[in-house]
Length: 493
Ligand code: PHE
Image (cartoon, rainbow, N blue to C red; front, side, top):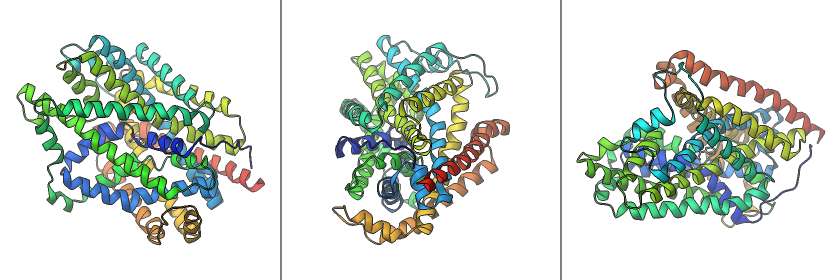
């Protein structure tokens, strides 16, 4: 076995915060509220909780058990399950690495907007400002144009910040997360309270939560609920496996998984109040119904929110708070993805940490420059779709298959229970063997069918090939080769 620095989390709290920091991110504030609204408000919450308990938390317990009980980063832990599965761990972290290359770019937009907040630089037309001044978006995915210096500068700052945060692995992360997890929570609470006191807020919240129970019968709602749970918990990218591998041997992973899963879900739920109260206010201001101002994704954070901020007292301060919240929400997700890759390389090849940190950070920074071009947003959209949908579900499927069918789950469950306050019952074996692989497989098939029917986002097929299938194929081939190296390292043991 290659060199393994014996580094543990400073404390259990540090681990829990780090895992929560990875889980809560843009997905909680951007994605959850809108999906919830779209799929029947209160009814979606029910489906979400079902998905969380039958698949999300069991998978989280599985990833923790892989990292902590079986031991190691994703490739090593899966290689110990069965050496023919080490490549699955690599696939997970390579897909995760591709995600970080653009995740950091969204952080760079936020960093630029943090500066713009000081002067409300977006003026009366935040939409034009975002698309034409900041992104300088071209009219098509193949019109690449030039790179943006302010975005590159922001990207550089974010990368330095990411690499410093994982400088000594869990030891540094243990300290950083006390700020980067609690600060966005504090700001979120301020934004919720401030938001709910705005005129029209109630109307917005009504949109968010009014249940449409009939939707519980629609398969799309269930698909959306499982997708959101998997993505939001950061499972399937090797992150939670690596993080759990820095836990001391006597840790209670069951309890931790429940705390983290519930903290993530409640952050998303509470985040919805900040978003929808502000939208309700904005709708009233414009004299239009709430659905007319509904926007998700980049539009919400970089167009709609700035437009709302213009009308608030203490506008620049609210802007600064909002973008500091986005940055601190995103940073722990970003560095958790990098840490998962660093741990994989260190354990397989025995390379030194600092050098690996710097090389991976520099590589991701250089790749990220591409997303600062005038077609950057289009490419980001394509790559994101392919990585999160296909990568995540494929890994979740293979991982549960590996442990459920090629390992003694019952023995693993007993090992986990040795240190858990509340034992997990035999139901866990059933979820790992049947529920998780089945859910992940169905989601994977649905995703594949949908892009076969029509290209994602109506982009040309060649763009899908370049931004989607080729990176996935490269990750797969590299994963298989690296998996062989991990298997060799393990057999030298
Ligand atoms: N869970 C994060 C979010 O909700 C995204 C993420 C996925 C982060 C995978 C790390 C790994 O935004």
